[in-house]
Amino acid sequence: MSDSLPGATVAFPAPDGTLGALEIGAVVATFLFGVETLQTFNYYRQYPKDSVILRISVAFIWFLELAHTICALHAVYSLSVTYYGQVEHLFNPPYSLQTTILFSSSVYTLVQIFFANRLHLLSGSRPIPFLCYFLNLLRFGCNLAMFAFSIGPGGIPVLQSRWHSLMATAFSLGAGVDVLTALSTCYCLWKLRNFGHTHTRRIVDTLIFWSIETTSITSATGLVLLILFLTRSDLAWLSFHLIQAKLFSNSMLAALNGRQRLQFADEEYSGGGAVIHFTSSSKIETEDLHGSDKSEFDGAKRVSKFDEPKRREKWN
Image 1 (tube, rainbow, N blue to C red):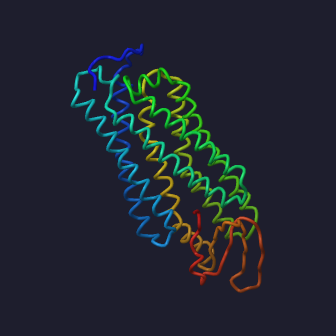
Image 2 (cartoon, helix red, strand yellow):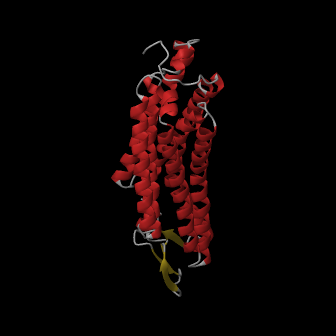
Image 3 (cartoon, rainbow, N blue to C red):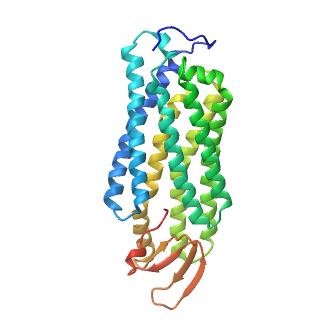
């Protein structure tokens, strides 16, 4: 690592918007990683029969987040302790800081594919989910380009100066995909609410609330990150960049672990007599427990409480 300033003409920002943003983001990201670890443990304990692909994906995301956390903490230690008082290293930071872009972009991609797949199963249609897939892959490509351009003299500060349009595109795609996925999921659930029995509508209301709960934080974080990047010349956006990946992985795990709470809520609403079951064919079939009423509508399926293999709501 060179001790000299790079040749790029970049105005030196205040420490509050550089090192301060890095430290705040790393601390919050470490806390969120602890929450994610607990959620991951609960997931493997509660859902041992989930598909192998889903279980491997959860483990892979956890290892990506572990590497992301280590890189963030290494960057904080290097700039705060190893190079204490050497402000020139803010222009030539350790490569661990740039590497967080690689790990976080991988997490974004995997989690958004999960949510887009959930939207596909829920809606039964392809255009919107496939648009989410495409925009997500485009975002991943922009993030890879950001990582490649950041490996060099100046690191992220020079990346922000020279490749401002590329970063703005990546952040805009991220915010757009988050909002599109959240709104589409809520819309599909809202259409589903107009059919079926009262118990089904109550369960769908719960699903809508949880969908908003798990996607609003990531969407809001992406929008704040984009606004800070476009309106400020320092690295204040970096703190949100470091925590955004953790919010994504936690939202995915919250959606997975929430299936058990959904079962309990359904049993409470229906007196333990029926459950709501989403299928890839997006079909709902409702049946009264005494066999006196039976109807069919799109979106989900209600089955007898004795049909244990079908009790779990399938998002994957």
